[in-house]
Length: 258
Image (cartoon, rainbow, N blue to C red; front, top):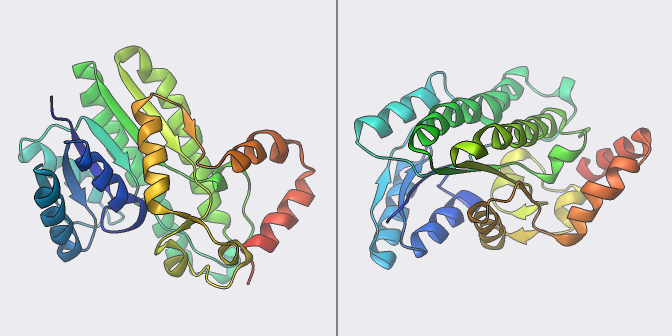
């Protein structure tokens, strides 16, 4: 049976590659992001290359009522979401008190509030059917505090904690929740987040395509947390938890500084 995946933030980066990977396996997709023209181009690509059906639902998830509007559009269109991929999100470099509070609150609205609202709505539908998969894109940032990206790191820590708890609640009802927690990825994220020139970006990152495949495969296998690099997995699970807190804070601060 063809499964339909809803992908948020599908216009670029990991989201676009997740949509491509799912379509390559014969699955239909629902694409959402703010840029309708980019989504339409992706729709044509996926339908042409894989013979699947792609639905375009452009909107701003971070706006008030955005998540509910997306859910309502999906239901009104008569579509069933078998796989929910919450990828939409953004970061922002700089000291918290130097950044505009409105930008920080917008980050929380998109990275946390919209993700929770979509997950709550679609996971309830999945549980009622007794089957479903959810992939929430977090970050290795969620394993530690993040000076110079304090709010972003905190949002990803929320996503990680929330997703793990939800998986425990839903697994007996046939629904799994997987957290994709990659390290730095070569996407538009760095430019939008003002990270160009930081030590994090200077070190380079993995491709969005490889990260998308890693996360998608982990989701299909029902894994709980997926870190895309073995070295990073060892670091965030075994080294960072044992580091002195001040030493960790200074290390992350330097990595995120320009």
